[in-house]
Length: 79
Image 1 (cartoon, rainbow, N blue to C red):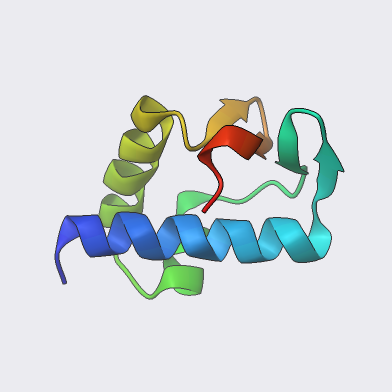
Image 2: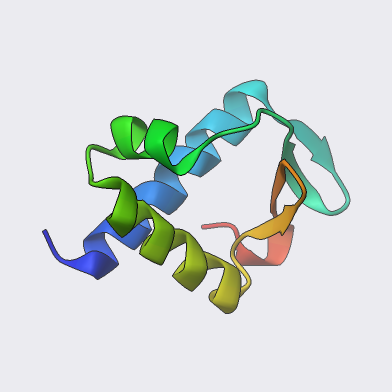
């Protein structure tokens, strides 16, 4: 599985969880569920190391903001 596919799959999974369990604000969807990279790996079906790389890419692209244990998916980056 290519890393970009894992990045997309992780982002879509986070978005689905955020829409279901997150809080919508002017900052976007806020997930206050503390996910470990290992838990995210089970959600996506990838190795933990791949999730770490994918999260780094999502943060660098601005699609995900992490503040402590909160994960924020900004509205301008949704879709």
